[in-house]
Image (cartoon, rainbow, N blue to C red; front, top):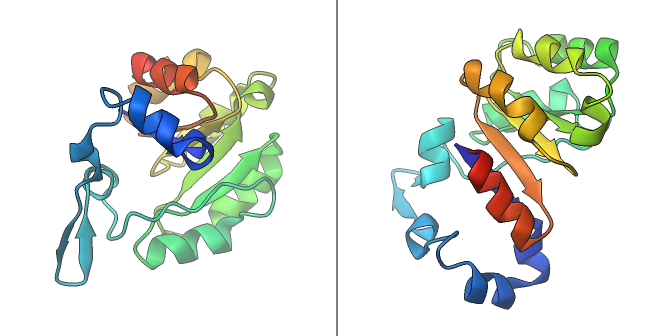
Length: 165
């Protein structure tokens, strides 16, 4: 299943709600509270305590930050961004045994597809793909049974991310 980072929704909330009721159903916004925990489809799918996802900012979001966010009940991400294999490996080592994800800029990952294999060997909690078409990577990610989060900028991007599943 693909989860969408709704940057489009932040800039055009009325347009999104008006045009995407079929894409983002009102049931996806339901929140259940109880025992210091918020349960949503996101928390259930990703196995996290709170619906908080730390952005995989290029070289700013390292293993320590990602592990700290995950340890606190959210989901932390290492910013794999433009693809420095040794830095990514070092950051996964720094994150220790904490479950973290990794994010990539898809057009950069396309130039270094071996990085996806490197990250999948680390059993990430999820992958975050930004600024490009996720299709070239989806088969391998699905085979590894790793959830994918696609950053979107437009309604067309949202529909495409859902279609590639």
